[in-house]
Image 1 (tube, rainbow, N blue to C red):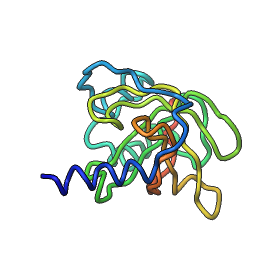
Image 2: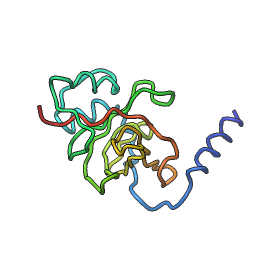
Image 3: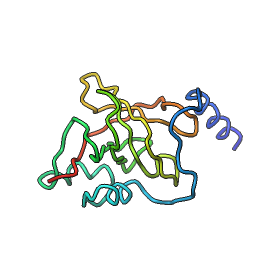
Image 4: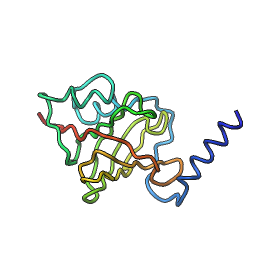
Amino acid sequence: MRAIVLLAVLLLSACAGSRQGPSYVTGSDSTECAPFARAETGIDLHGDAADWWPEARGHYGRSQVPERNAVLVFKRGPSLPYGHVSVVRKLDGPRRILVDQANWVHHKISRGEPVIDVSPNNDWTQVRVWWSPAGTMGATVYSTYGFVLPHR
């Protein structure tokens, strides 16, 4: 147990920095990311978050370019076995967006948090995400499919 706590402290300290920046809503909301994104955007897709990309084909536009109210779809990976989705709230530069999302921080709704494109081709297929508990950008690079657009 001590090893797990020590590992968690080390991982968070690797991301430590200024506590300035967006913060998460501190309630104990158990909303998952997919129902949250669906409620926020009206995009009527279901299933695991990672499945939103193939499910959108033929029903919603898909793009490698962010736009307001689009949903960024994260691929499955070791730390995201079901993928993840977040809602674009603001374009904040050519490689930076602000998102609203649920359950990025366990059982929390996060609003206005930065996501940056770190993909070599500037196509939003690799991103880093703000980590509110440390008050800084997370160190992990996540793979994404792109953006499901809120219009058909």
